[in-house]
Length: 44
Image 1 (tube, rainbow, N blue to C red):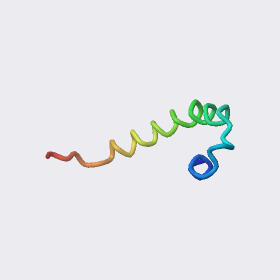
Image 2 (cartoon, rainbow, N blue to C red):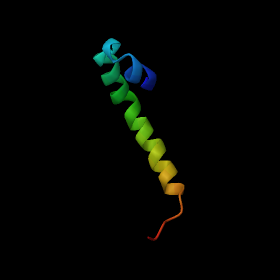
Image 3 (cartoon, rainbow, N blue to C red):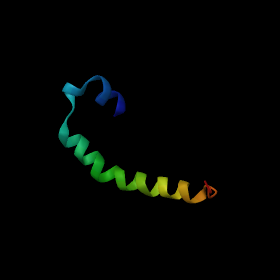
């Protein structure tokens, strides 16, 4: 999808983008949260 948005933004279907956000973003958030939980704490 990144390639489409970056190179063919005139051909973007807003419905497809919105469906992707609704269905895949929560899944991505879970995955990123799990990865962050595995990182050692940093004290700066």
